[in-house]
Image (tube, rainbow, N blue to C red; front, side):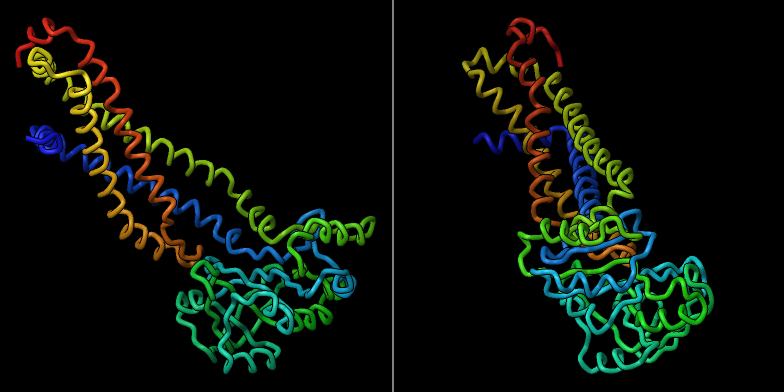
Length: 385
């Protein structure tokens, strides 16, 4: 009988216990993968950020606005190849619970800076031509059952009153992680109404998006922009788009940190489950190991049997957990698709999960192997099964 077959038969000597251990490991590995993938979804926006885009906001807080006149001054800087702007709108649709991001943008320049937003050519002309036209993401349109030509009314919160729009285009993402839950409309539509109703709020934007030719000069150009408006009534803070996105993640830092802690605890649970099984197994077989020693088996034979069984269970549980993770993650992604872009399970996450299972298999067998090797033959033969 070869060693692999002996290890497999030893594992199935207690089929119920072994099966429950494998199932427990599979569930834990699956949970680890799902949690780590969920964490990745928080960082999806930052990972999708372009290295040649900067974001300029008010130095005090992104809640405060900047004068639209800053655009031309920023555009004249060396190394800047494009500038656009956006303003958060913050309206509600039918019910205040219907939240989705809405931005008033300069449609003539904004989408040139975001090639990942793919607008059908036949819809783009009307989007650009009509003042109250709207561009929405495919996922957002699917969420509310919207289609091109639908008239939509939003109730303003930051900008009070009813605002009437017409959906003229629905965009898709060039990449899987591109956010398709956004709503874009003409900044001019917002600005004209502000000029009529609240002149102090006219010609104000929330952020400037700056495209640069050389990503290596991001820090230098950021400093130039901020220096240009230093000691003004609206000082600026400029950073890379990735840093800007990570700033949003930091607002939910406690949630992300909690998920990371849970993922670590899952590994500890895997270790405890398998270690408990291996300790019980080793204790039951002390007399067998004693007999093997008397027959001339060396320490590495016993060591190999214990570690082989532990690794066999760990790898089997890890493999099943990886298989379970894909359908479960698909269901979760579908449930949160209105709020997070789809984030597939990364190969690195699978690798870490499997390596964690292997590491647990090695650690779980450490004490049982030590115990089996250190128990004298005489003491082992005294144990009656």
